[in-house]
Image 1: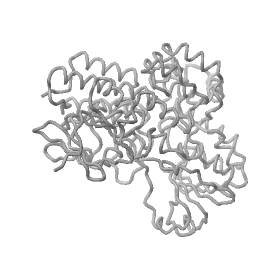
Image 2: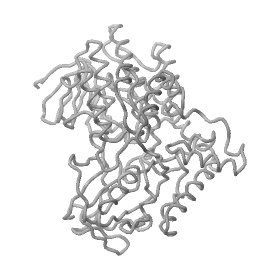
Image 3: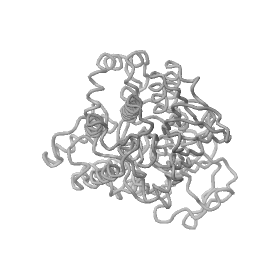
Image 4: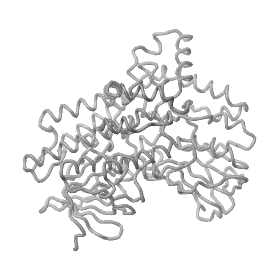
Length: 533
């Protein structure tokens, strides 16, 4: 077996998590490299180039805090970072910290095996070259493995097929074309209004309607940006002490039933006008009490009924199958207004799924719909898909995928028992996707880096998560989830969007502040739950 190269640290993925992790490793003198499937950095913001793609967290928050110089020199131009702006930011970070020379682009990792006698990983690339490393860090992202439904006949379609999670670099021109789009989650909600602007006709195939709130997207006023920069320390601290890692959304103080109906609706109206996710932070019990949640859900449904002219279409767009906020809440710019356009049609496939795709379009409920282009806005195999795409085996040749057959099990979302020196950034059972992602990325990277330094300083060769502590953490994660309304929804949080995937609630919803406190206590107790050898 020929070893192509030997490293201290191999990092999979050149998104924000991978780049910060590489920066930390290089700063400490480790020999580290990233292996990235794409041809540039950016991760999520490299692949998701679909029309209207932007972050659902305001750009002043959704940015790195580890470098004061970086915070001060980068000037966000939009309230919410758009894909082009976020991609530019990622490239700026890469160049500023001189990371590109340590990144292997156009390289996919296919296998990784832990070797006991050397206490190291042998990692295989898609060209069959093998890299030996002491530490293997998965910065593969929570939403990075596109999910394309297995529909009969999809290979026979003669037109163009696009997936919002793997959009071509050159934007397709939909002018004078009929477009079919399947899916009305976040990427559908963002892309539908843009595609409708130029398409001759847009056919939207909706299985499940989603709650969506107005983003109120705009250019970012210079004075607001500069004021934020002056007070970044304060805002970052507020974010760390919040539930979701967003400075302006501090924990609410009153129940939805502590106020009258008129006052409650007035609070919702103010949040609606503010835009973003403000509504979910109106009251303490919106995600724990179904009756309280119903008040917010009905407020939004009434807004949809006000906006959409056709009553039948409006009702189809009103979600009734899940409490508001228990699926990833969509933010939009004129999404519901788009259904008032003459060239846009909504086709409900909730009761009669798609029978087949043929060379001209698709058939559902005995009706054939023809179109020139087909867009899948069908999301991702979330949280576990990108990890399971790599054949990872431990010293006993047991695969991580088989260990996760009944659902993922991790300690803190950072390590998996019996897989030494393997780390995940914002893995299952961590707050990742239920937080401001970059804040969680920084906290995870710092934790992993400090864990590696503790191991190195004490001359240990390996670190592993204890099985007992892992089981306790998974139970805690589930207990917290089931004290909320989250499990009531069929969502990618549960893996419900993937056929055959075992249903498990994967994110930690106890809040980023609570999670960080738990992690800090573990560090102070000499890394309780981790074993060193």
